[in-house]
Length: 259
Image (cartoon, rainbow, N blue to C red; front, side, top):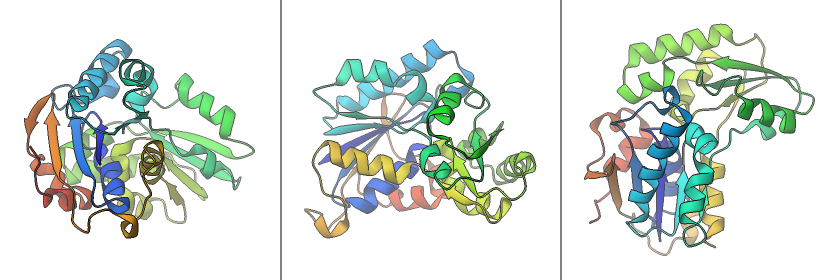
């Protein structure tokens, strides 16, 4: 079994780690775009073209399913990626976990990139799934970029700035950018008492469902760990060193490479 993931950068590590937990035997293909990162600052057309190129590069490696592990790309490029690859290759997008976060009502915050915050896409999700929750959209300028660079001081500053914009006493906090899911401990500490809602586990589970694969290490075909292949803007490469700054990347860094 081979599962491919596409993102602008390190945001795909969270979903990749979730897949690895559920199916340690799966081979992974990570296709990201360091040449064009961050996608959130680019035009819709440019994001679409870059995401599609990453997806096509990953598809050449023969995966069974492809995950668009990026909120920005899921907004602007998912339809194009699906049009190019389905039905031969199932494609799974990433949606912020607004529905489960809002299910309990009360005060909910959504942290996202400035481009996604207040976008028609996010407003549509809030209208559809927000229910009776009191939802505050919080822009997080520079946070994804700081994560990508592995810049701890910049991460702390961006998290603190977002926390200052987050209403006191929020019950739930939706992480609306996959890069942020690498920072759950720091964000939880900055917004005490808020339950964090991420998308990685749900996306990984959906990808397995699309190909009829049972989740859970107990159901793994092999007791060993699947291989790892990395594509950086279409070029075969190793996992970037900065990935090891995060627990998810450090775990993948010890994975044997596949040709």
